[in-house]
Structure formats: C-alpha cells, structure tokens
Length: 367
Length: 272
Image 1 (cartoon, chains in turn purple, orange):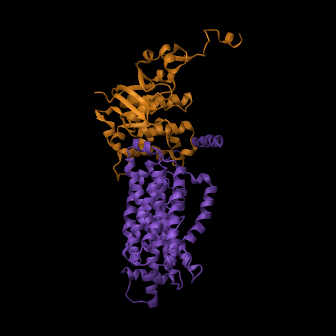
Image 2 (image 1 turned 120 degrees about the horizontal axis):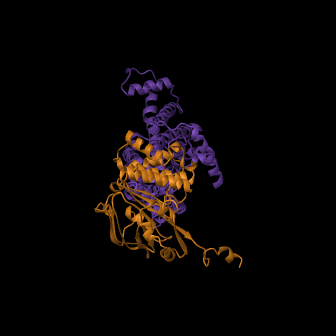
C-alpha cells in the first residue's frame, strides 16, 4: 500500500517536468460558489412549482415578481395560487433551504474541527442530544403545549446539543490529543443514551407520541413564516460565525499544536466552532427534526468539486445543503402524494448510496 | 541583547522530567545545532521556545518577553517551527499548506494579497517544491512533504526558525538542499536558526555552535570541536566512537565503533 503510493508519486513526479507551474495561487472559488447558488435557485423554483396544485413556471415567476413589487397589479391566476405559494410552499422551501444550509455548514465545521471525514452533526451525538432536549421541552408537564408556541423548543434542543457535544469531546480528549476512534465511540454511546431517553419519554407520553415521532423523523410539513423567522436568528448568527472561522479551520487542519505555532488561538477557535455548529444543528433539528446525511455528504460533495479551502468549502456546503434538502423535501411531499414521506427518509435513501459510492472512490475522499 | 534567553528551564510531562534546568542564549543571526540522544529533551526545548509547553520553573524569553505570555499570533509572526512529524491534511494542495504560513500576518478578516502569494512562491522555490504546488499532500514523498513544511515556515517570515530534525526523512542530497536553503536565507535575511539534529556529523557540518543535551540537561555548549569529543560521545550516547576530522573542511566526524573492536582488528574479531 505504502509502496504503491510512493510509486504513484514517483510516476506523477515525472509529469511535473512537463506541466507548467501554476500561474496564480489565488484560489478560484467564485465559479464553484456561483454554480451552487444557481443550482439552489433553480431547485427552489422547481420546488415552488411542484405539488398537488402545479403552478406553471411562467405564472410562478410573474407571481414572485409581482410580490417583489416588479410588474403590474393585475392577477391572471386563481386566487388559490396566492395562498398555496406564499403561505404554504414558500415558507416551507425557505425553511428547508435554511435547515439544509445549517446542516451542511455544521457538518463541514465539525469535520474540520475534529479533522475527521466521518464527523457530522448526527454521528457525534449532537442531533440526538438536541432531539432529547426538544422532546423534554415538548413533553414536560408545565411546558406541554406551550413550548411549540414560545420557541422554547429551539432553546431546549440547543441545550441538549451543547451537552452532548461537550460530553463527547470531553470524554474523547486525552491530554493534548483527540483520538478519532474514541470520539466516534463516545459520540455513538452518548447518541444512543440520548435516543433511549427520548424513546423512554415517548413511551411515557401517551397521546403526544405521534407529534414527537413525526418530529423525530424529520418533516417540514409544519413550516410557517413564524417558524422560519423564529429560527432565522440562530442560523444567521451561527452561520456567520462558522463562515468567519473558515480560515481558522484551514489552519486547524495541521493539528492543534502546529495551528498554535501558526498563530491560531486554538482553544478559542474550538470553543466558537463547537458552540456555533451546535447552535446551527440545534436550530435545524428543532424546526425540522432529525434529518441525516445532509451534514455528512454535502461537505464531501463540495470537496470533490475542488473546495479544499474552507473558505470555499463552508459556503459551498451551505449552498449545496440548501439545494439538496429543498429537493429532498419536494420529493418527500410529491412522490407519494397525497401521502407525505418523512424527509429524513428521502435524504438517507439518496444520501447513503451516494456516500457509499464516494467511499469506493477513496482517493477522491481525501480529507 | 540575546534574541532567545532560556533560563533554568524545567519542563515535565506528568512526573517525568523532560528538561531539568537548561539555560542557553541565542544571539540574532546565530545558527545553533541541538544534539542529544533520544528522549534527551531536544523536542521539548523546541516546544518550550515556541510556547507550547508551560515551564515548571524558569523562563523562556523571546526578545525579552516571556513566550507563554505572548499571544500565539504575535509569536508566530516572529517564530516559525518545522515539527519533527508534521500533521498534514492529505487532500490539500501543497501551496495551500505553505499559504498557512501567512496566517499570523493576516488580520482576523484578512485575505492573502499578491505579496503573500509572492512569498509563498519564493519559499517553495527556495526549498524546491514549487513544481508540486498544486499537488495534494498525499501524492508527495516523505522528503517532499518535509520541504513543503520548511517552505511554510519560511513563508512565515520569521526572525527565529526552529527546526526539529528537519532532515530526518531525507536522503543526503535532500538533506543538503534543505539545509543550504536555510543557510542561504540566514545569510540574506539574518534569520536566527535553532535546529535539532539526530545526525551528529550533519550537525557538525552545518552548525558553528552545538548544544548537547542528555537526560534533560545541557551537558555541553560550544563549537563542534569543543562539544564532540570521544569521551563525551561515549558517555552520553553509550557507544564507543572514534573522532576524526573531515578530510575536506576539517569539521569533526563521529565514527561509531563496534564494541571490543580494535584498530585494524575488526576481521580478526569476527573470525578469531
């Protein structure tokens, strides 16, 4: 194995004599990000047109333009379209996009923080912790029925996420090193602990079971402008912090000691990353339940397309996550209409095989 | 004023002492080779000077300021380190690893400008890895990886360069090219260098001054001729050795000897 790698290096070494050295080292990140943004816009428009009532694309664009204040006041479409688009589909699409961006960004941040390509919000236990926190908030007698209205669910989910993140991190860390295997095992153990507690609460909950169950499976069926606006501040704040730490994440890839020797305040960076990635995950989970594979796969997709610099990778993973989750949710609500699939089922169903395909092409998955 | 002042430095990992009362000073522009057996505290000395380990006792000052009290960013603008076993992200292209050397010079929201990219290119050319700039680290050989890390340290534009066995995985050709690159930079910019060496002969070739560590103590500090004596090598390394001088430049050369062998009697010993 070692020998073949060196042989390969020797072979490619000859080619460098022919290949011209790079003219500019300045990273070309805009084509990739622009492409992702265009894909996102396209997916969102397609998603807005699809559903039990199909809105013709031309009408859709006219409606959006009119709402934006461009174009006339006359309406050449059924009044029901207005309700369907602006009260039902648009908040749902935007929320799915926001959650996808949060999960993609948090996944990339965790992978960078733990320098582990398998880290994602779900695998290291943060999502399960958030799920437990949210379930407690939904079920606890004094909070019952109130939580959903007051935005206490996001806070409880955040507390659960923080607790699991810090617990996994604290258990795995020995002295100066963070052994990857220990971290994953600790994450799995804490995850199942939190999940079993969630199950216990559900078993004891009686009539609320269905609400919690559908919440845990992941769904955007309950999307609304209120929900969207309620979660927006958390996501905007955490997303901004994660993006600001992009260069710090690049430095962190050489390990904590060398990162410090390269001038990074490592402890502060780690704290900010854990806090913001957990907040983003918690906010995502609290409005849509546990949706897997977005946070794991999207960063790898962006890396594959040439984004090893976290300043490309992080915004790229956010855009890709948003587009992917909007697409997944559109499939979830249309493929078996009028029945709706849990969106987590769709992401796992499409994400898992894709990830296995990536694993088979190991070299491309270089971290 | 000395650039680096290490005074009565004690460092311990748990209960195991790694450095026990080491004192030495480094003048600007100096090239000091640190030698000593495995576990003698060489790497710990590098870690202490770069502010990674807190001394139990004593102090490490850079330009008169305690390194532990200096913010990492400020220290990294002046002190660069080439670790013994660098951690390298496998999928990242080599230039991006070198670009990390510019990190301490950029503000929190700063971006690399043309000057940063120029410095990266110059550093990579100095260590002969510019042609590999776009290659992922996983594709590079051990020697190439080492030279990329040296380039990263040079891109930091340091006043003090700490090299922890920078040539450990290199063949003699690449050993020479890395060290010559560092020497050239030292001559042109007045860079101060502290380099840890495993290879005594290499250290004696390149360093006008050597510091010999044994069991966490500084047992000798001086010119290679002063530090490398047969008796001291035997004492510190536990191996009998003959000291010779390099036929071309007169630097001391350590020639280890098989136990119980006498001059000219090696064959006789094998078949008595």
